[in-house]
Length: 293
Ligand SMILES: [Fe+2]
Image 1 (spheres, rainbow, N blue to C red):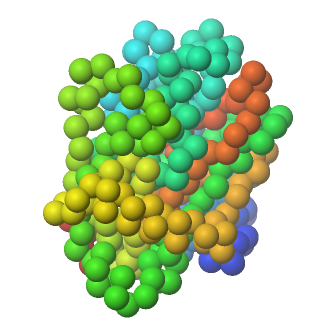
Image 2 (cartoon, rainbow, N blue to C red; image 1 turned 120 degrees about the horizontal axis):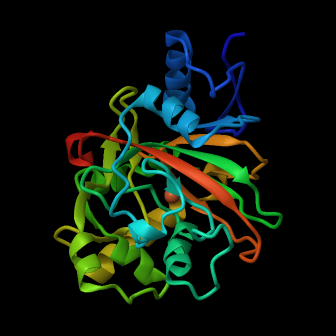
């Protein structure tokens, strides 16, 4: 069986068939998936019943796992999943949906804002891979937006204006948008803003893209309200429906996306029922500052 990819959205997103990601991949299969990522930025693999170990092994074909520590407010003793797995569920360690007022749950609601994973880290994410183990019966789509198409559609004046801007990103900014502001002093230190380019160049394809995220709360050299108004305008432009794919999850879907060239957000679901989604994340290994156009 050979890998084939069918585009399922007018500007990006491919559905992959002819591959079993629970098994070790051949070099040709890895190359086909990488080429698909370069072209489509988001790949969907249906019916992939994987364990955490298999998901991590598959992910490692495409880079180095991010050290996910420090990305969340969850205490190590409250973690549900092994090291290397990101918990994007609504479940506590007891396997039950978290209380509505749970601090962890309210923090995680930041995932409903358009963002790029780990843009709040000095070295941000390359690919994320999200596996649907238990799908919530109500809502819970994940939406993706193509930041290459969004960049291409800017007028020339705006392209020149954004070309060399540097933004500051922090989880404090994104959570603050939702009114989540009760951070500890240690969290404020841990999530001090980091610098990211607003326009970056993909290392393999050379395509330029907007690097936006809810974590972006400022532009160097700009007054804060003006920067935030501009970032909001750009985000509105970049998330027009023509650039957006909405993924309705089926059990055992795995979706893999390139955070360097896309944004995504989770949509509402029934918080009293289980949603078990598990993420592996690959580090970009270098700063976006090193990916200038
Ligand atoms: Fe995310």
